[in-house]
Image 1 (tube, rainbow, N blue to C red):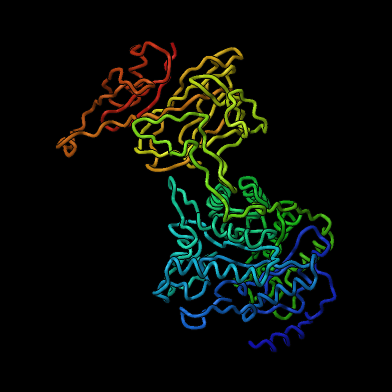
Image 2 (cartoon, helix red, strand yellow):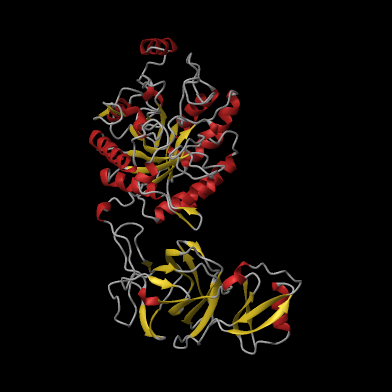
Length: 618
């Protein structure tokens, strides 16, 4: 349909007036909508005070090359769906209207010259060059953006990303905008890849994109945006946000597309959003809310169940409804005004709700994450001695030799609840970690729940490992836990009371680690119970030795009974028992009084290498 015909239809419908104030004008946050069929409706300001171009600001809508796939770049900012036009619409009433750029990085609707199949000459380096050029061009055109969807739809689920960064993927509600003939791109590789650590995606490319955005827009609200985050991938979405924040991504807000809310109860909707906010620690924006219901009352009921919570909850910073003219939205029956101008029940309800409840709206100030950091100058944390701590057959970690902190978010190597350094060792006094004289030299003291320390280590063997920690405590409430790359490798390790409010008696406590990934990692010690002193931690590999020679190729026949080694906390073999199972071996050791001293010991199956700890109290 031609533009002139669209405008004529709007005039017939009586929707050309702009005299009325938008529903949320004067409220605490925005209530917005999208462009319609590539146009900004003349009545946009009658209802909405925020606009997001549905497709107009996407990379593929704007960026092309003038000479096939290798010529000069061209940027057409308003040729489709009014990216620049929407920006100017918001600028007509600064402070009252708001514009959101959607989206800088997305695994769909990117330029054809990035496609592996369509452009055989594309490389990782060329892709990196084009991404940088794209970011720079947007920053030059819109230097004062208020809201930006920096990365869109990158959750890893079902052996693929939500959108086709590397290969075509299904979109929200199974509606994919991926070009199956494109064959994917090198966007992920160009932005630094996506490491998998202990089975968990690190989403390095997302972190890089956010850092690039923060350098160009230090005052913008930077958003990660995705779908199915209130239902099928709620856990994966939370984990993604937690991971990229840990890795230093300056994310300000988590965008909930909310395409998956049809029929969701009020309590379910509220509890899920609350959980997401609590576990990510981020404000949320409802970025693409739509309810695809042919039944007017069913659609209205969902709006009535969801909108009040969005509007009246301070950590939800805005609401964008994804389309309001029925039949001119991305999915069927999501519009709230018919083409002939008739308002569906949801739209009538919206007008009534905001006329009576505008003052109930609440919004928090969004803290700009990392706005004072020059990311090109950031520096990773590094080992205290300059050398990674090697853990092979054994490895010793001196507690006071935690990593030197780097520069930038996510590059801290320690956290101490108290800002004051209360140590007496006169060591690392410019840091708040409390280092005292004691143990075999120096120890970490004054530990409080929430304190943590990190050490760069290299595991040369998979394990299992026995752990020994030299500790003291004047109380019986002390404990800690160990992590590798923020994944727990031990249960909570209890530190015994070694003195009555005295900390000068040290004992070794222990535990086991079944296995770790070989290679360089960050070992983290988190204090979970105050107060104890920590001297050192020893890792000792207790994996059964590999059979030598031809024996390693011989498969031994299984018998009903197996042999189990008894090992002390130092890794020394004390003896063995024959038993039909691990449980029977443990019971035999306990019943026969084979161990004469109190402490932590281990039972190891010679057949499988499996280890189980047991505590002996005399």
